[in-house]
Length: 76
Image 1: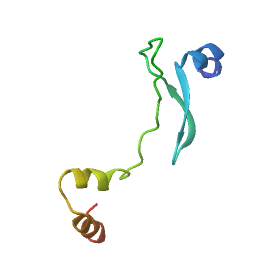
Image 2: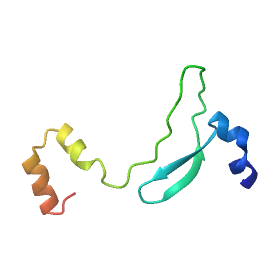
Image 3: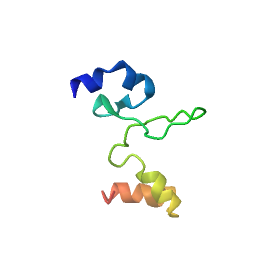
């Protein structure tokens, strides 16, 4: 595994990429297996728990006030 992680060829091809996570810090992960000459895929870290809760609730039709009430009631 160490040899794979340190392989300059795998890093250059994007098969192994380093991402910066808000909680975990920097870590290595597998890049996109799909490769095209004109396509550069950006591998992003996973969101932290609850990071998009307000956005999802808003998309579901909740108002800002309702979302704030859910937070106050510790329902989300």
